[in-house]
Image 1 (cartoon, rainbow, N blue to C red):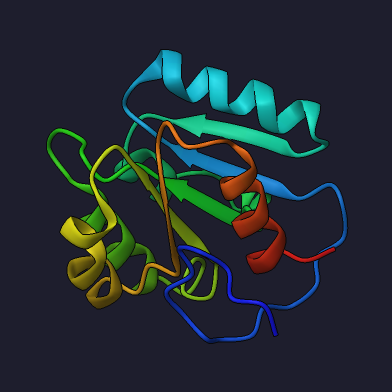
Image 2 (image 1 turned 60 degrees about the vertical axis):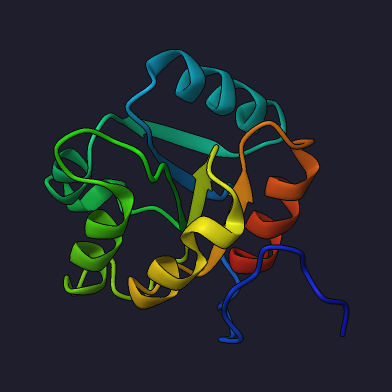
Length: 139
């Protein structure tokens, strides 16, 4: 088995029916829209929200296959959002990928405690994120 850079978990993920639905939780609207545009070109369906509270209040019909989660957000950081998601029956098994400008070493311990499944640093080639999404939401 090939190691996936940034993968923090060894749990198995269920196959999903395409299109893969990605929820982007990001307070930087411009960055979130740019990421969503790239994902849509690659065949994903995306929803953008600016906070974890908004994500937790979304209608059930918009439950994603994977969450791309910013860590540095005002009011409620990504660690708190991930912990809240893991405490809800709706998101407890949804794969979460931390997507941040912080270094992996700076977030890994807290990320694993919050049950975040993987890490991708902003600014690296997008293929790294696409590989992680493909692993946690296989089609």
